[in-house]
Length: 304
Ligand code: BJW
Image (spheres, rainbow, N blue to C red):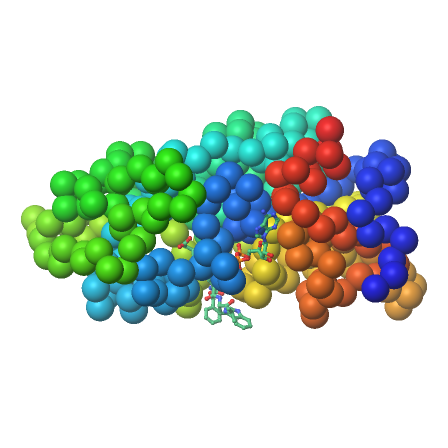
């Protein structure tokens, strides 16, 4: 499709130069540039499972050992990965511009490790490195970066093979997994001994995002008389709510009725390997931008 702003870095720089309020919504594609797997499409499988089928409260209830191996593996990979040029560029944009907020669906801690100013970083889906009590009546939580997390999860804490043609032993479905007895998994130190498991401090399907966090985002987006100028949508398939709704909310927030009627809002900037494929959430309006490519590489160029 023809759009004058396809891959036009100078046009983006001109827009950036006059912009004060900027919002970014990030997804797994940003960390794909650091070698971490995405959820959907190529790379979204873990052994014989769809990653999405393991990220649910029901899966944890059914087989906490299996779900913990999945998360222990992802903790290990995230600790081994390094923030990429995209994480650093966003952190630098935040330091230069107090009117920039980054909302990230990623749980891998790479924004934090790139020194993104904490008050301008909102982690929508929690963190792999928070552990919380699985009991709904206990609010124990703690930060933890151990890998392996406990002896039973050691099979997940194995380094990736040096060669890209070799498969990680834990990802090889022909390599049998040890059945994990829940008693060998980490337990809540605050609950009576061996009653409640600890679980990853992430937001699973059907679970609510933090209420104070959602309120603060809403207040920031809807700030009166100061509409948002640019919305960066980076490496996300845009199918998971409520994250999928922030770009459109931010595009139109604070606009006059006249502007809304004419569809005049913030410029939405898509940065995605598949940015040229216009889906329902990647419909380009006038003034929007699309950059097809690797998020780390593209953001490095856009924000240098
Ligand atoms: C590259 C690249 C490169 C690749 N460079 N790009 C309204 C309508 C319908 C349903 C709902 C609704 N409101 C709520 C729901 C239910 C549900 C939902 O959204 N369902 C939809 C799927 C239909 N939402 C929820 O349950 C949320 N809770 C909630 O709303 O509570 C209240 C409520 C409950 C129930 C009903 C109604 C209200 C919670 C959502 C939690 C999501 N959790 C997960 C797991 C987190 C833990 C973990 O990490 O394991 O979050 S799911 C998974 O998807 C993960 C991700 O953060 C999230 C988004 O995925 P993301 O980041 O977009 O990754 P991918 O893989 O999908 O896409 C990667 C993209 O990158 C692709 O586009 C590639 O092209 C691109 N790419 N390499 C640039 N190098």
